[in-house]
Amino acid sequence: MGPGLILICLACSLRYGFSMDKFVAAVYEHVPFFPDPSQVPVTRTEALALMNRNIDVLETAVKTAAQKIPDPAVNWIPCNDPHRFGQAPVQERLSCIAKHNSIYFAANFGDKKHCNASDPRCPPDGYYFYDTTVVFGPEGKLLARYHKYHLFLGESLFNVPEEPEISTFDTPFGRFGIIICYDILFYNPAVILVTDHNVDTVIFTNAWFNTLPHYSAIQFHSSWALAMRVNLLSSNVHNISLDMTGSGIFAPDKLGPYYYNNTVNDGHLLISELNSHTRNSTECSPVQWDEYASQIKKPLPSSKVFSGKLMLDNYTMTALTELQGCASVCHHHLCCHLNYSMLEKRNDEVYILGAYNGYHGPHQVFYIEVCTLVKCMNGDNCDIATDSAYTKFKWFSLAGTFQSTIVYPEVLHSGVQLDGEMFQVLKDGRLVSQPKISSKALLSVTLLGRNYMKDPKNLNISAMS
Ligand SMILES: *[C@@H]1O[C@H](CO)[C@@H](O)[C@H](O)[C@H]1NC(C)=O
Ligand SMILES: *[C@@H]1O[C@H](CO)[C@@H](O)[C@H](O)[C@H]1NC(C)=O
Ligand SMILES: *[C@@H]1O[C@H](CO)[C@@H](O)[C@H](O)[C@H]1NC(C)=O
Ligand SMILES: *[C@@H]1O[C@H](CO)[C@@H](O)[C@H](O)[C@H]1NC(C)=O
Ligand SMILES: *[C@@H]1O[C@H](CO)[C@@H](O)[C@H](O)[C@H]1NC(C)=O
Ligand SMILES: *[C@@H]1O[C@H](CO)[C@@H](O)[C@H](O)[C@H]1NC(C)=O
Ligand SMILES: *[C@@H]1O[C@H](CO)[C@@H](O)[C@H](O)[C@H]1NC(C)=O
Image (tube, rainbow, N blue to C red; front, side, top):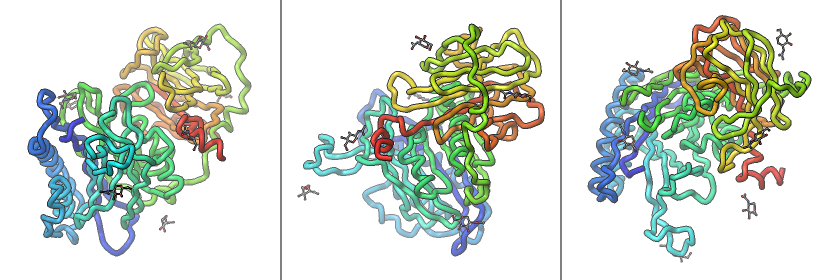
């Protein structure tokens, strides 16, 4: 990723002096301008020109969002301090955008930070280079800054802060926290922001490759908001050749609006009203994830059960051969139980129920427990994920004997579409369809447990507790 990278804009209406129960958020999915690969490294002037082209697009989006956010009382605060960030022209522009539009504004880019040569971690050029999100308040003040902690494979360009940073800021409409991209799959700081720092809304800039069947952007990100019971403002990069698309304004009770378009290379602005304090506006007794499933008898060994791969993991699977019925599969201690009824049983589509309990992928960086109903690409070869399906289900009910305390419920429809109205999570841990017939064909239904304490990075924490 080059210095021209900027990924998000976020706007919230503001009234001073009193707290607000609701606010308006906007998220922009941006098609970034990158440096010409043949010109690397680019000069400072070139990098700045590129950044300015990116910010031009964002500024237009912010103005559009601000006009749609009715709050005339504070619509004008002059940007009266242009030289305050004289050494930092990008920050100056972002600050002015926030001021001019009287909004909170978050943006993501690479940030260089000087380090002391006596610091053994300091790179040879004397600068740390961090993947960074900054937030400016409606007066243009820098309110928060966050450096990404969990770098994805191949992001070796960036440095990792020594410890995960807890970056929060308070507004009249609740407390905000910041994470970036791959961070969302881990415990610290993403989960800790919610559980220990009482964050209501998480700002989440990302450049997310859609990975079916369980980790497409809108699918996993909306389920994170649902399971953590917070708002998640997710701004993805738009690049369809890299399969990057899928942004959304997600709340525990509202999985959208979202944007997913893998056919045109256009940016897109989303705007939505949110509750400021999600956790006292939604019910708070926790789900007992294994309550229902632990009452069901473990299935007897069956010739219908086979082993197959999903996203490189070795699942125990069984195919759904009937129009309706029950299916159960176990992998180690995790048993998954499904009850289902299809509207019609098609001969050209195979759905499987799969169970997996272990580290994900060859790099083994995180531990998952998964119960999943997925449509397979062809036959019962599910290793190649598909994004389209024709079979509609009358109803389904999925449960598993999870040891994870946090389980992410995902229901995805054909064409990578969400519909929060179509399902609910019961207190006994069942993920069930709503009692109305879906008009949409089903791609997958998943309970994705994250046993964070088994992650290599957390083994010390679990040993202590
Ligand atoms: C670098 O670190 C050394 C040792 O901690 C300290 O004496 C020196 O002042 C530092 N230099 C700068 C420029 O911060
Ligand atoms: C998408 O990303 C690739 C690889 O970084 C880049 O070459 C291409 O120009 C990008 N496409 C757009 C539309 O930005
Ligand atoms: C993507 O956008 C184009 C142009 O607006 C539209 O024709 C197409 O239907 C969209 N595709 C999806 C999947 O939303
Ligand atoms: C919701 O929580 C916030 C902060 O946690 C508190 O200020 C507010 O009074 C609560 N609202 C209700 C209706 O309980
Ligand atoms: C996958 O699991 C099956 C059944 O548990 C086992 O027989 C097979 O050896 C495993 N394959 C790999 C590659 O781990
Ligand atoms: C499936 O549903 C039927 C009818 O509602 C119920 O009797 C049965 O116990 C369910 N089985 C499982 C495994 O949930
Ligand atoms: C666990 O803690 C020890 C001692 O503090 C440290 O040396 C080790 O690197 C830690 N392991 C992991 C996986 O973080």
